[in-house]
Length: 216
Image (cartoon, rainbow, N blue to C red):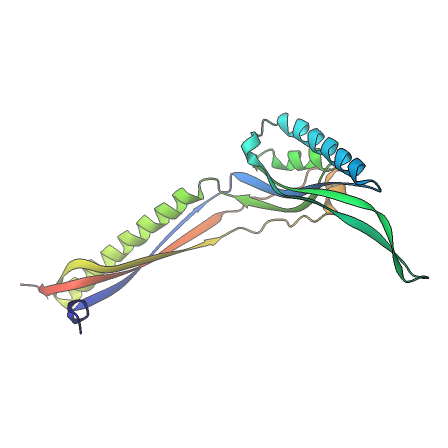
């Protein structure tokens, strides 16, 4: 048994929890165009993309918040029930995007671009989630320290150095509307309601203190 294992130890668990209202909306969507000629499909998709960027510019969304997640094309085929054959229909060019928008006007933005994109889903998030995690961690460490001091007093010992420390996080997002492709038609008729709820982040720490000696 090494020196570390032979030391008397006190294991303490600490927890910290913080919450905040989401302040940005992540809209996952795609811009698509179809045509029998792939060159035409590419051109049409590009034109729709330019129109989308022009509309988003009116909301002053910075270019860094419009991220391309994927771009590609594939064949479209119809199935002939009589011949049981796939009949070439054309090409579909698709560009998948994540658009990050401020929460207050986000529903209006979705309504404004509904005829140009197919919305896959909408996530409401806290922009500075890293700060929330750091604060939750600090609260968890403080909780462990206070618990450690109380236990040491109850046991009649004093605490020494920290021998081991580990932390973990758990974030719970509020329920958000999962808007599918067909929802774009409905959104064109009116802005959807997006109740923000709250984002909750929990931190947990395990702290192993060395027990130095009994209290004098």
